Length: 127
Length: 378
Image 1 (cartoon, rainbow over the protein chains, first blue to last red):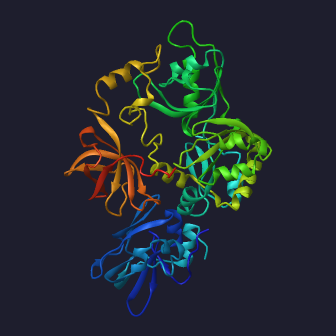
Image 2 (image 1 turned 60 degrees about the vertical axis):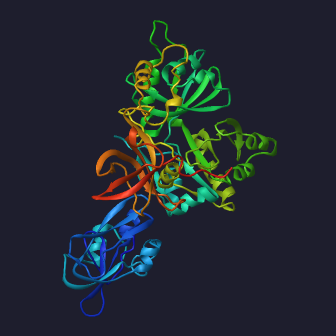
Image 3 (image 1 turned 120 degrees about the vertical axis):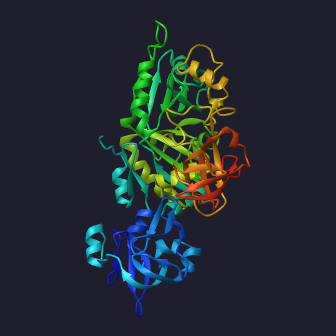
């Protein structure tokens, strides 16, 4: 059963949001998503300085089996990308809630987000 | 539609496999990582449950002549102990399935169709026994799929693993076995039909045996192969392995709407064999019209020049105009770039042609390359 990390918030589209300093958030995809995708081989992320909008596509995640859109869970300006995950996307499978984070946003607003408990219950995940 | 389970389903569950529906069968998609499984087959060995594949026996005095009539190839000319790839077509030349046929004797053949097509193929073969004339053929068609399991051991270490499980007196039967040949041996105490065939582009074997022996043989091979890098492998890596090897998958590259010539299987169609066969007239007309060479479309290999992969049904473009469609595609784990099989208009099918694939609204560069994408070192 896919692990759901406590203390994070989640979108319906399987992105997680971690609160950092002030309005800064980091974003990644959940283990529910990485399990469904399989081994990720390519990730296309929004550019630093671009604006992402909650609920809209901002990139894609490609595995050997399939390709999925990446949806931004928040609205704001992208401040940083995880270049390690771009160079070696296997880290996203190995550590989706840690070293496999994708990008950071100076968030001005959030889309609809679920608590870890709600997300786990909805997706059969394990807290 | 009812769901089918192989005799090894419980073994897969114990191994923690994730499952997928394939042709009406619950089959292991992967056990751990499909990339790790893919690399294991290329570098060491992989163990596959292929029991969803069909086994249809054709026996009787007219077995060879009957298969010559029912299929597009000349199966009567196959030597005992050898296998042959062939197609079963309808009267219009459309492909009902691709098959491997094993000849045991002039009066005994085994036909192996794809999982989901097995009932159709078995029914078609039975219907074709009456032939086109008044006589019909003296053969019996028996679908033994429900009682038969198929286990594959694929990869450079496959032979070493089988040698560990066979008696010394039978080692030469294994080592001398040529590609597309088969023999009957005892592996870990179980009598099997051992064929040097596969769908991965590597050396390897496929083992046919009764369902009741499948779990014990699976365990024995797992144990014997553990020290040689063998791991259980699911259908996800089976698909990426066959794609790298440029092998078609029925439903993707082959279909009732397609024909053998555009799929690159013109040589499989024995138009010059004696007598009539189902689809002969239509196939002769397609060949005369230059299907797959000067007219219509052609199956080609595409190499992605970027990092993004083209997937099944994505449009293929030349200068912005749609000239084809991808049938299978994904990032190649072995080669490190995207590969795809696609049907394109014949005028754009030459090796080296620069094309694009429409990757969800964005055209990305691809190049027509010779197949297979991956060929093992001999």
